[in-house]
Amino acid sequence: MAVLLDDIVQSIELWLKLIRKPQPYVDPNLDPVLLVPGIAGSILKAVDNENGLKEERVWVRILAADYKFRTKLWSRFDPSTGRTESLDRKTSIMVPQDRYGLHAIDVLDPDLIIGRDCVYYFHDMIVEMIKWGFQEGKTLFGFGYDFRQSNRLQETMERLAKTLESIYEASGGKRINIISHSMGGILVKCFMSLHSDIFEKCTWIYRIHLSERNVVRRRLIECPSIYELMACPNFQWQHNPVLEIWREKKDSDGNSQIVLEAYPPEESVNYEGVDIPLPFNLEILKWADETHKILSCAKVPPTVKFYNIYATNLETPHSVCYGNSEVPIKDLQELRYCLADGLNAEARVGIPGEHRGILSDHHLFRILKHWLKAGTPDPYYDPINDYVILPTTFEIESHKEKGLQYTSLKEEWEIVTGDEPCPDNKPFVSSISISQAGDDQSSRAEACATVTLHPQNEGKQHVELNAISVSVDA
Image 1 (cartoon, rainbow, N blue to C red):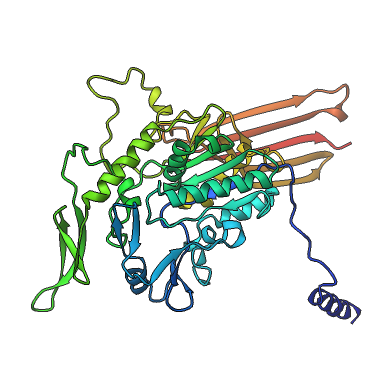
Image 2 (cartoon, rainbow, N blue to C red; image 1 turned 90 degrees about the vertical axis):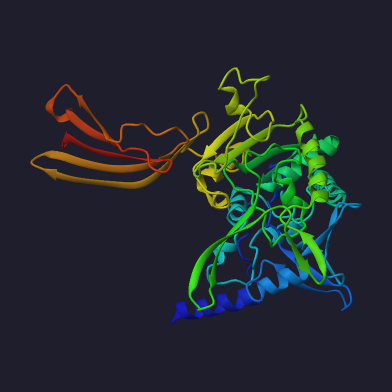
C-alpha cells in the first residue's frame, strides 16, 4: 500500500511540476551544427494572403495531398527574378521556423502516427546528436527552405547568411559545422561560391548519393531546383532526354493494358489556359546554366575543412565519362578524390545504404560523432580504416569438474566497412592455442579459440569467436 501511495504522490508532484524531469546531457564545449536537407526535405506551408494569413501544411501531408499540391505548390517561373511563383496568386509558401529551424526538417508529417518513420528526415540524427550533448537553439539548428526555388535564389542566400551569422554570434565565435544532404549540398556550394567571406567560419560535411536518378517530375512543374540537378543546355546528350511513364490504361472494351508514355521536350501541359512546357522550359535551363557556372567555380576556402560521405548500395543508372581526349586522366587514383563535387576533401567515406535511409544509419552516426568530436570516444570505431565493429553476441559460462575450472566464451561481431568484398565466397577459419606453465600443477592453464570470418554481405562482415579455457581449480 505504501508503494502505491508513493506512486500517487510522485505523479501529483510531476503534474504540479514540483519535481523536474531529468534534463538531457548538454556539452557546452561543442561547436554548433546546422543541418541542411535536400529536395523535398522541408515542411512547406501555404499562407492564404486573403483570408487572415491562414496557414496549412501542403508538404508533407496525407489527406488531400495531390489536390493541395496541385492547387498550392504548382508554380510558374519568372525569368526576371529567378523565382518560381505559385499559380494560385492568393497563396504564398513559407517554411516554419519552430525549434530554431529543426521542426521543418525533423518529421515531415508530424500528424502521422502509423508508419511515421517513413516521413523522418533528420529525425534520427537529431535524436542521436542530442544524446551526444548538442542542444536545440544552442549548438543544433536547422535550415529548411522552399525546395522548388533555385539553389542560388538571392532570398535563400540572404536568409542562410543571416542564419549563419546569428549562430556564429550566439556561439561566441565558434566554427559552425554544416551537415548537408543531397541537393542541400548544391545550395551550400552556391552559398560558398557567392559568400565565401561568411563561409570561412564553417566546416562542411556533405552527404551525397552518387547513384541517384535526377528525374523531372510532373509534380514539380517550373521548379529551377530540378533543372539545376540536370546537365546544362549545351550538354551533348548521347540520347535525347525524354520523360517516360509506365501507365495502366483501359481500352474501349474496359481491358487493362500497360503503356509506356514518352514526353519529348516539345510537349506541354495546360493549366487554366496557360501552356507550360514539359519536361523542359528553356528559360529555366538558361537560369540553371548560370547556376552550373557558379558551382563549377566554387572552391573550398583555405580555412574551411570539407568532408564527404556517400552511399554505395545502388548502381549508377547512366553513363559517366571522366576526362576527354585533350585532358585525359593520368592516374586512376585521382578519381577517388575528385568525385562529383569537384572539391578537395579532408576525407571521403562510402557507406552501404540508400539515399535518405542513410540519414538513420548508425555507421553514419559513428563517423559524424568522430568528425564532430562529440561525446565520449567510440571504442568500436577505427577512423583510419573506417571500420565500425558492432558487438552482437556475448556469452560466457563457467563450471568446475574433477578439480578443473572450465570456462567457455562465445562472441560475435558485425564489421561494417567500405572495402571491396573478397572474391572467395568461403568462410575463413583460424585457431589459436595458449598454454601457461607454472611452477606447480596448481598454476597451469590452457586456452584455445577458433575464429570464423564469414564473407562480406551488403557491406557487413560477420565474425564468430568460440573459446574455451581450462585451469586447475585452486
